[in-house]
Length: 611
Image 1 (cartoon, helix red, strand yellow):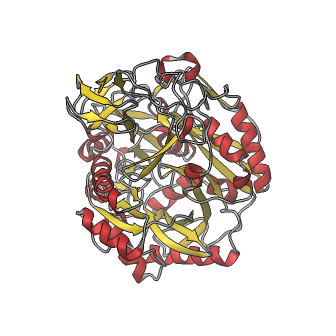
Image 2 (cartoon, rainbow, N blue to C red; image 1 turned 30 degrees about the horizontal axis):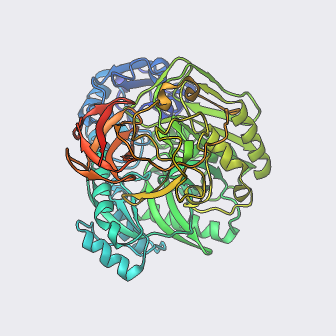
Image 3 (cartoon, rainbow, N blue to C red; image 1 turned 135 degrees about the vertical axis):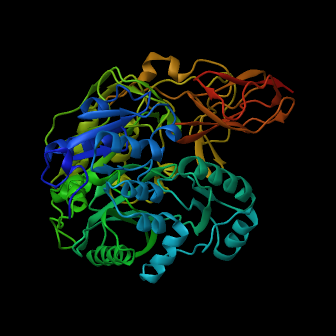
């Protein structure tokens, strides 16, 4: 590579040829990048929002720049602010991490137009692979197998019904410009088309700034397998193993592992070679991931993520590589350190995402708040990538991830046992977390036997109605059980998503956020026997928000008649939409909120008076 911007400023260059890198992100990935930069002798610059002023990534960076504001749109998604910050401090490169602007072609172009190095592919590759419809066209040209899907964005529910009639249900409505489960809804039948389309478009617009969606035939019994690829400026394009990411809820991953267990060698080879063909078709540069659905011994292209992936540590663990350092090498114009595809993995690695969410009853409700104490086990083969330490606070403005517990073992069985032991010893006091959920997954016989699909977690795995702490449902204890066979749980579909609901949070009462016991999450989580299932009883009640967040949908008006189970409001918290529903039949009165209002846990939304 030629002269790198910033050399004239007298910076000492690291081993990669870069001298100062601005990290355009926050949380654990920002911390991860900053630490690798330090190891490489490269100065780091952190940007931060008002809520993140004292965050760990800010404390660790060599320099910091305040972006001003709290919301993502006015901070980590503001291209001008971030590019100006990079210029201000004399950075010669920008690392986008994952999420936020990492797959934004305009951002990549703005960085390079400013004379800086963008640590990732160029804007053209990001643009074509970021537009899922366009990516499908490229995949077809590269002879990568695909499931049936639309060639253009859809705007009308009738298009969904026509697609479903031709290809069958369920149908996936997916954001054209995003990933990670955001802007995705599953349509089980024609009656759900309207709501699913509206919800997917709304969420896609909020998350990615574009409401375009397209359709794919939803494979109901598939595994989610992804292949890590890397390309440099010297013509080297390689695939570096695979990962299984099938354990998901709300289309977001909970547990990942590498290598993907139980796959024939020949299938791995074909998926890897297809991923390389796809990367070459768009002149790809840097780290990327090609995601597939695997069903019945066949694989189908899902999407390509043009960035470092959240679950990259499991690949690092089995290959003995630092993929962030490899990104820096490529960005500086150096050749890849590994130039042969399909290196043999050593052992097995499992990653458990530890989020500030309460998995009670399978709801995974966002639970921001302070972390009073965080203790990480010091076992061999255990790594915890986190953006938090004891005393930090998980803000409600961003995603819910606290950290990633990554565990290596000489084989899969030992990796599972070591992961369970590490989860037992991992302590996070202050907020409910997904630790109990991860333990439930790893202890399940289906997981041990590799008998799972992308719908396995939501359809098969049962979570206690008090997985981490008692939660008051606010429903009369004298009511009788409903139709659910799982004790106080019921299955509902909202905008194409399946929820197991213990009649949660629509009537006034004590909230999980108010109970000290609910703010503790650790491996030895407290348990209690779930109370018998209860259906909503007659009476009146105040409908309250179950968490802090933003009201993004109000489905009722004063005087409307509603039925128990009906979705009255949708509250978005930590990048997740959470329906708030009636637990009694009645009439809406005293409507207290409108779309866009920010509410706290327990805030009144409306009153349901008995009809």
